[in-house]
Image (cartoon, rainbow, N blue to C red; front, side, top):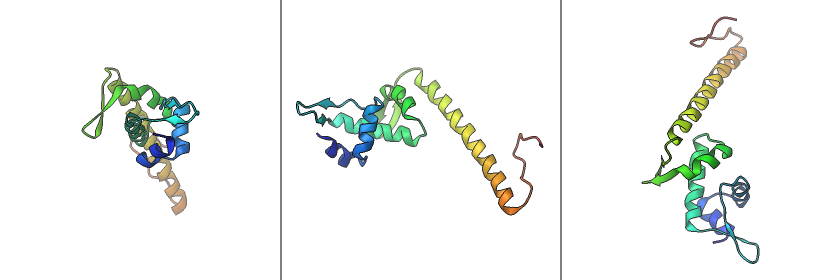
Length: 126
């Protein structure tokens, strides 16, 4: 199938599909005309990429993760021994970022309301 069909089947723009190729996430074959040619397997790969992006992983992390996940009953499952530990590290990174965003939001709310910020657990005064 050509890129337009892959785009229609996955809901991902052609531009984004080309970006996935640039990042090494997709490897379509090329027709003699130079057009990209995709298979049904690429449809599944794009769905995996989208799931991993939604989970907060960057495309550089996904490049390493993608060969180590399989779709099992509609959800992704790790297949490489180290992947679970690597994903746990990404989980910790995202959790820390969420905590920082909560602190930032609290500070912003305090400024908006003209009140002192409420100290978050583990914060020490100033």
